[in-house]
Each structure stands twice: as C-alpha cells, then as structure tokens.
Image (cartoon, rainbow, N blue to C red; front, side, top):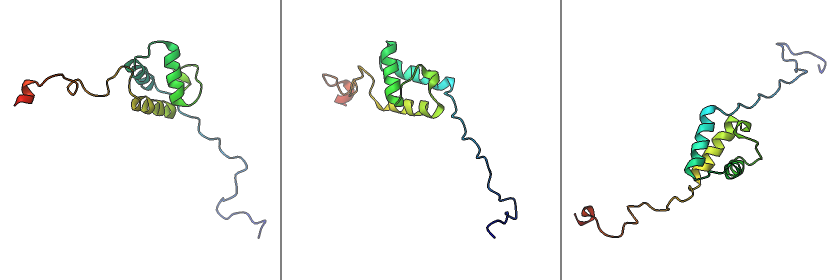
Length: 104
C-alpha cells in the first residue's frame, strides 16, 4: 500500500510553488508618508530617512524600497508619534483667561 498512488491526483508535487512576491509601495502611500514627515517638521533628508527607517525597522535607500505592508506599518507608527513642536494640549485649554463662552 505504501507504493500506491493517490486515487484522485493527490500525488505530492515535486516542486512547491514559489511564495508570492511582496506588493511594492504605492504612490499614494509614499505621498502620505511624505506628508506625515512634513507634519512632524522633519525637513532634512537625514532626519526623514532616520524616521522612516526607525518605523520600518530596517535600513532603506529610499521610499520605493518599502513594500505595501511596510508602508502601512510606517504610516501607523508615524501616526502614533507626536509631531515635533505640536503642543500636548489644545490652545483652548491653554488660554489665560475666561472667554465669553466660559462666562455663559
């Protein structure tokens, strides 16, 4: 019985199919990453590259080296960190005196 072939074509494949290649980063993802970096006040290319590499968890030459899934992870991490120079509270909370709305 050990030498019997499968009845319905269940023979083991001699060659496994290659794993699917990762989807490259999309243009809209690169644009969003650039906007997120701008919002954080990162103007120099070194600072921007360092922030993206830190979020991606690996060294990169440019944004085109990211995969689709990595770009989503980078955007999530950039969205979780506070932008440079962004106050921790709103200007409304930081006002010095009562406004007419407060007096109502």
